[in-house]
Image 1 (cartoon, chains in turn brown, cyan):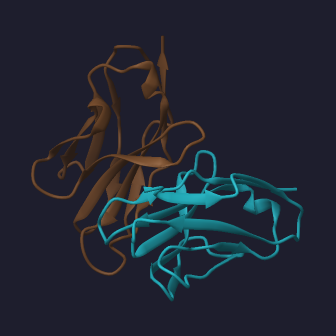
Image 2 (cartoon, one colour):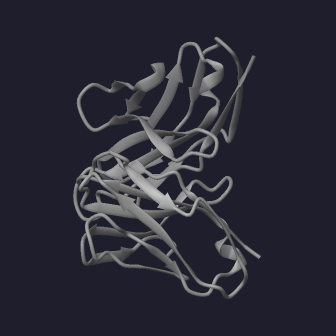
Image 3 (cartoon, chains in turn brown, purple):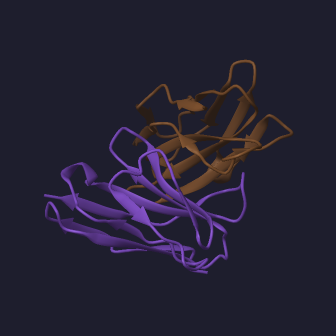
Length: 116
Length: 112
């Protein structure tokens, strides 16, 4: 079974500073990877996803992530954060084929707090 | 499109009461899911459905039941509410496997 580890439960960062949210996964087979964002009192929405192809994936709101197969990582980055980026971010993984491949396994989340 | 809608937004139940959380999607998605979210624990899959008439258990199904009589609706039933079921519940749907899941706004349930 696959699993996801988000190494930081909380990340404070000053406005306009860069940020990296870390995500590592464990799986014995190939996977697809996702980052979701949850703003306060809302549901989750997709930021970006890696299915295949280029390992650098660009998403909405200026975020990007890089898939590193050798390090089993999918870290999320943004070069300059804004107050409106304050939210909780979830990394998720699914198998790329086979039974149950549509199911997502989520990490525990990282709360990003942008300080004015 | 309204996307995925959930009702109610909030609910307080007494121990032993029952209730149904409603979920509807208007995107003609085959796959639908119920998750619960507890602080610091991420999302855990309760039940899922790959089409009308087909449901299956996820990681934490105990204390819950589901049905899927139509493509659009996927209600979640709590029969005997317990304090351990205090959580935020999210419904989601997807068009096909390995694709993006679309989430509803959630139902915040408290069992006292």
